[in-house]
Length: 415
Image (tube, rainbow, N blue to C red; front, side, top):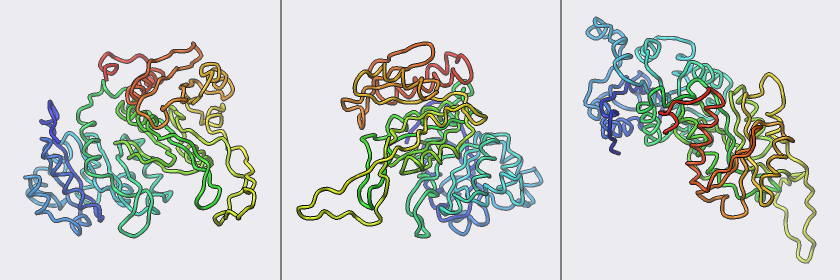
C-alpha cells in the first residue's frame, strides 16, 4: 500500500502486548514501513513470549525497546523521549491487562510508562478472549480510555485460538493501518466531532422461528456501516450496533454484533450516554410469539403450522423519549415503498426523534450501492439526488456534525 503526501514524514511508536495476536504486529510493521511511516517498537515482557525483538527490529529497521531501566536510554529519559517523538502511539495487541493498567494510570514497565508520559494521540487494537472482552471490568476500562481520548480499532468477531467464538479478535493489520493513516492524515479541522460519542445501528434483525428459520428483511447494512465510517472519520467515537451482515467493521469503529431486535435495544441502551444516535437498522417490526427449540417439521398433507406474531420493542421511540440519557440528536430512518415523505413526516412526529432520513426501497436500494434520501427535520424536507451510499453517509455525517458543534469550516466541509 503506497501513500502520498505528508504521511511519509510521520512516525509511530508501536507497543506490542502479550497475546497470540502479537504475530499480526509483525505484518503491521511491514505495512507501515511500506507506507513510508517510521516505526519504533516497545515489546512487553509478555509480548516477547510470542514474537522476538529480532523480528521487530529486522522489519522496522530500528532498535526494539523492552526494559524500563536500560541505563543508556534512561540516562536520557528514554521513556519520555520515546513517548513523545512519535506522531501516534499504537498498542497492538492491546491486552486486557494493558488496557486496565492504562485506564488506571499504572506504570510498572516501559510500555505503560510511555503511555502515561505521552502527549500524542493513542490508538489501541484490543485482542483477548471473548469473555475477557465482555467482562464488566474491561468494558469499564474501555469507557474510561475512550473518555480520555484513546481511539480504538476492533476488536473483530470470529474464532479464537482458545476455541471460542465472538468479539475479541484483533483487527487485521490492513484495518489497523487504515485507522493509523486516518489518524495521521486528519488535522483538527478535519475532525470536528473529536470528543463526541455517537451510536449507530445498522443491518437487519433476525427473529427466530426455530433453530433454522427466522423472520428478516433485505437490509445489507451498507448505509449504516458507511455512516459509522464517515462519523469516525470526522473524529467521533462511534459504537456500531449491528444486526447480521457480511460487512467488516469500519476502521476506528467499535462494533457490537446482535441478532434480534430485543438484543439491539439492550446494546443500544448499554452504549448510552451518547451525543447522537442514528438508527439506520431495519428492525423487524414483529417476532414470533414463541420460538421452537427444535426444527418445525413439515407433515405430509398437513396444513402449515400457525405463526403467531407479537410486536418488537420500538428502539427509535425508546431512545427518543425525554430523559437524562436522551441523546442531543436522535435520527431515525424510514424505509418506505409508497408515499415516502408523508410517511416519514408522520413517523418523525410519532417517534419523537429530531430527524428522519426517508428513502424509497421499492427498487434495489436494500443491498445496492446507491441511495436517494430526503432529510425530514423540524425545518422542513430536504431531498438529495441518488448518490453512492458512501456519499450519502458523508453528507449526513457533516449535517450531524453541524448540529452537534455548529457551522463547520470549509476544510471539514470538503471532506
